[in-house]
Image (cartoon, rainbow, N blue to C red; front, side):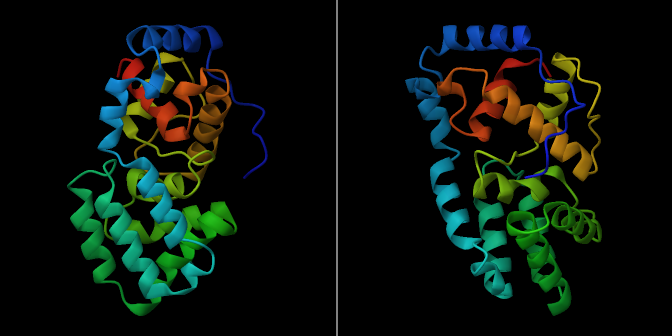
Length: 216
């Protein structure tokens, strides 16, 4: 993980605790509350994490074709990626030539196991070729592979969080950038340590709490 970015403003603790209190009044056990457990079942988070951690080890990523197919499989099964983006990504991978498929897989491998910024920006570059450089497609697999470190950037949630907490830096933009990603990731990782553990079992859970709590 990159070094801490000391200049960014953290989420306001008072506002965060207010959201936490309101959420726990509705769901006293947080994400262990029966209603939230039912909601969580559709995301199959534990299964998606297990599959991703099996499919995308450093060794596994050395098999380009299998890894490319597994990227399609994870994205196709993810409840957090839109139904419009799934077939487009599948067809994108299917139509890649050998060199570009190797580039795609190497970019993911770098994101997960190597020079993260290099991998992130390479992933954005190759997805741009078919206008698929979307936050969801760039961040979903890292969020499954390292659920307590990486973040899934859902545009409506990210914009809502920044607006609610009056955060000026980073500034959200539709095109994925490493600068935004690392700063937003720090905001989430810092803030989740300040709330009830039943709201922060993973970055996805904590982001889900924010998504349900802030007005977008």
